[in-house]
Image 1 (cartoon, helix red, strand yellow):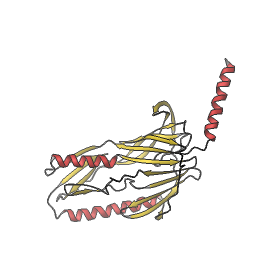
Image 2 (cartoon, rainbow, N blue to C red):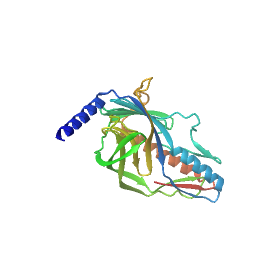
Image 3 (cartoon, rainbow, N blue to C red):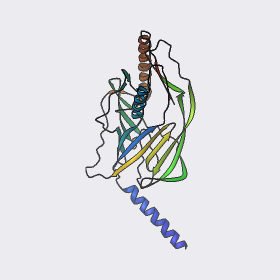
Length: 283
């Protein structure tokens, strides 16, 4: 019996070392979903307009991304969609979601512990270059199948600033309501597979002993729907170089300033009109 156990253990270690030694390359497709708690308060938005607005918001938060990866590098980007509009509009209203990452190119180099993101902020291209922050993953015993892959659970906790709701008011004479902001502890849950032994994952997530197939936090879930390993045409990963170079802290300060400017412009113009449409999106 002991001999059988030793042989089994040796074979397991042998095949694990073979997997780790392979030059894994591939393309993973992910889909994002977000649960939305939306309240619409308006005397001028009829049922049809509300349905259109709900459909547009749902489409905005359901996107598809691709992750091109090898052992060392990865490139994460939104999948091309010819039907994708530049903004959302209904009944004369146009809704733009700022800072949602649409159109970003996110390059990660795990060997050099750094990343580069090319992003468009209101028509200006920025290149964010900074070090990767690796969370303190807690590896759990729980497993589940995602497609044909056996996946293991991992979690970590982080502090995030959350708004109780996002309020969107169009053509209102009333002062906008400030959403309540609080800092909470959020649990991020990942599911990774050892069958693809690369430390990559969607978005900024990485550092587990296998490819991350699912990430969930708050109301957001990103789930892998398709994987192509060692594609015939290979995998091309090109680090983005375009845009004004900043680090993450500098970019966040620029984005916050731009958002304040937009709020001021909106508030100064909204007093000239008399109709009100308000949308609350619970976080």
